[in-house]
Image 1 (cartoon, rainbow, N blue to C red):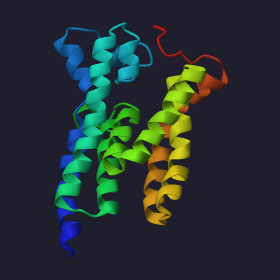
Image 2: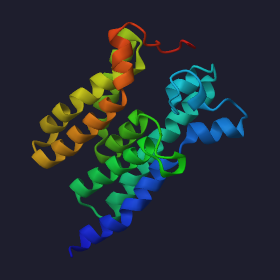
Image 3: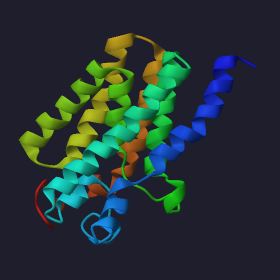
Length: 201
């Protein structure tokens, strides 16, 4: 068996476990705050924590979620040094966040962790995706819409950057997963029921 493939198989559970650790749930317990799965969008992520009014904690969770996508990619680069495997390692971390083993496979929507994984894989590509998110958020003030737009463009940005089908396909799969996790938000957006960034309800 290929040594790179063996290294990747050994790395797989590490990436998944890192992704499965949910900082919003853990920090909410430490600071004796309501469980983010019990209010707002019921999504254990930074945007929902922001609805509690705790901006500093929300920012900290955002950074930690980005880091847990970024760190597995750095580890993969160090061990494997193969772009495709490194890219997949980041996606596995995102899947860990979305389907965490520690929380009955019910996690967040993976946006911040995915941004971290993309930044680790290609910092320019990651920054372009984040700028797309920020511009959409500035114009419309919907976190979900910003995520949907930025990840819709991700495969296009990836193809323009690499012109490699497999690398583009990996991020196309990531796009499908992230947008699927926003299906309720899409319904709310279409019915003008989605909560804007900064609103508490």
